Length: 158
Image 1: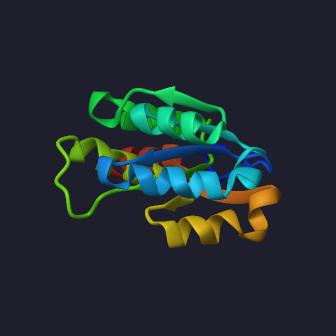
Image 2 (image 1 turned 120 degrees about the vertical axis):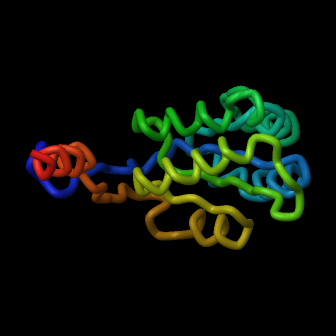
């Protein structure tokens, strides 16, 4: 495996979906989840802090809650992505509001990119993802084998 260029991963038919929204976008995400309950109830949902609580309260969907974003929730979601426990992210960020935990947000975006995790940052993209043919079937993705990349860099320094 260390010599392979890519590592194959499968996103199963039942997705583990992280739901995150900045304060100015929480109502939008709750309304979107409410509108799409029939689809979302077939998947495992988690989210950060208040967002997870609001979605669970307003929609009745079970949502596992992590810390709020500024208290490490974005990092918890990122860690779950790295562990292979999150397959799909809906993150409605507020582009018009500065966020005190912006480095955590950027780290989450980066780790989703590294692990080739589908991520929506607006409702149009969330709709396209939710209604994709891949939503109800397994999806195979290839992730660059970073262990090999690091080893190749070490070898090139010798």
